[in-house]
Length: 274
Image (cartoon, rainbow, N blue to C red; front, top):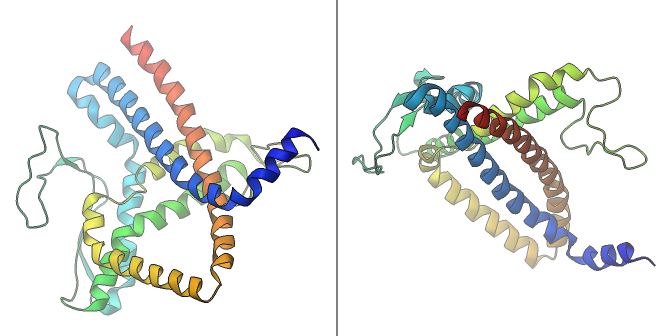
């Protein structure tokens, strides 16, 4: 038995937990690479346009902002039979806004400019359970809308579904499906970048969804406790590991894409400096 096989056998009992932890590690790595990419874009913008160049990052991500707001709006429309109604919608408009706390009081931002890129305003019945459910789903809607669009764009770019790891019979990596047009890689990576940059709900979104998230997390904890008590937790762990492995693959794709854009941005930044 060779050394590689021994290592694989030793890791096997811990593989499900390593796969689950990989989601968190890769997510944090993605956040770091995306922040680094934004700093490079801000630097390029500052060298080219001065203070106005700080807005380049937001203009680059305009398609993602639009999808973000449309995701909010789509959920509100789904709850129209329960009394929800959109009063105004702004898909993309960079404007200054005043940061406020949950009680409406102005919050000092330490000199940093707070910007609003889009907005969906709506009214709904007060004091009803369905209103909190609608608020919560609308708040986290960009997660689902952005993920669905990412999967669609990945298929456009490569011909593979996001949940299919593109390996051939000899375990060799295949970027594109055989006979798939290569020119999709010209625009799809940029759209993937902008969609995933605006996929995460804003702080205001999380605030609106807080009661729904508290209820959802409570139900999940109770369900996990029941599964543990009935000795069915192992089946859930197996399913969770399978889903986590696909999420890991998606996050690896995004990190690699970020590194590619980081190289381009770094070379561009060096060019504008000189």
